[in-house]
Length: 167
Image (cartoon, rainbow, N blue to C red):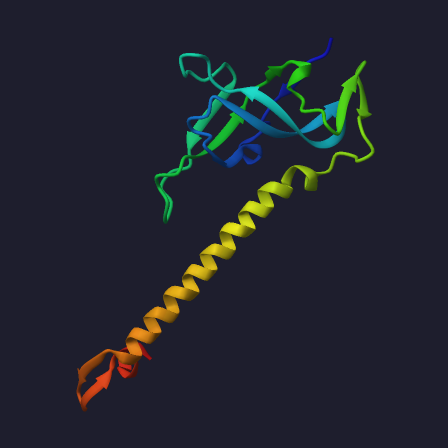
């Protein structure tokens, strides 16, 4: 019977900006799967982060990412692992597994980072597009308001859009 050991070798290898990471009880951690010293690339592992009382399990360290420019109510964390032992069942093995200490592909499609990151990337792109559309709408509304808002300028009445300070 084998086990996996999840370890963060340096601060540079910590998991950053993990959504809900500061309070999560469980997590899916993407880590380099190494068997007998050979890397098989990033693979997902399901693991418990806290005990039933909410305390972090041994070997797990979590720190809040600190103040952000916006959305400080969101929970983002930085996470480290210090030789945390995971059972064989922790590996989410839709694409690959470890059998008798050998890496085994379990289906026709091999494990790739794109498989893991596709949903995350799609979500991030949708959020970015929504933010850009919101900014564009806000800009257009502000521009329309400025073109119609009458102000008293040094040379008499003018629109807000024509004020030298806003050009």
